Length: 373
Picture: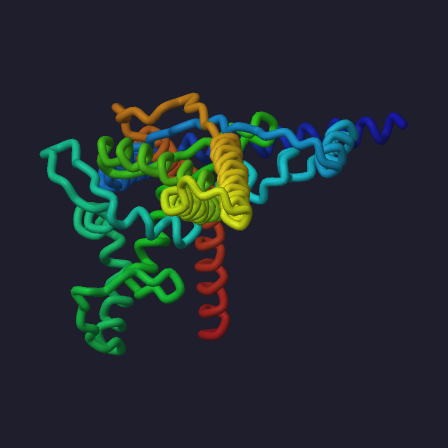
């Protein structure tokens, strides 16, 4: 037992000696380390100032959660008591908050933003979102260098495509430029959902603060419109059908009422039994037509209330505002990161690579001398 403790103590002493030896080697080469760190800091500053500024607008929404008295709602309640999540809210709604990020990143939603007009903060010029992303969005200088081979290959292999002035966006078949814009938008416009509170967070990142805020406001409006159209789709169809029936019932009622009035005008003062029978029949037809017209009118009111009931209500917890400070690039982190990388690289060269290189040179010289002998 004592020997084991002595061995551990000796091993600890050797590790401490090794660390002190490594530290002394680094201290002896401190000038080189400082030079490397300064070069890393300069490179970090060049990279940080080459990246265009990005401004992020954040909007938070609290959607209405509808309760259901169906068995599905009871099953969801049991699942929540057991600590499980069914993924959807208690209501029978297929587009629940957890799917909102997928809606925002979908192709139809992205293409619906192409023609949105935004205003730049610098000079007040107006562009569509597509024009702003294509013409006004800047890239760092190295992206041009890295993308140059692909552009050259594209010029050689691709055929010239004539732009159609009457071209309309087809979500089923996008052009290369439209597909590129969709990917750019889905990267810059994102949504997330808090699993506990169902609060939806929408982030819009643009190089202009005013464009970012305006687009965020438009995204919220489009998302609300999309969900509203989906939620009220069935009720609106029922309302349209009820209104068509009501219109037909009103026309039939007016026709029957007019026929009854015309008959009375033509046969006023007659005491024939047949005339009275026809009069009663026309009166009954008018009464039945009125009853049907009254019922369909009630159905119209019912479905109007249903549309209003199913229309979701969103509470904007954090409204869009024009960001003041850029969210990217984080120049301090980039500077610290490149300085640290330079220090690590220099330390690795001093402690490992340089000794290995010197050892390789010595062995090569020994081999050469042995061959000469």
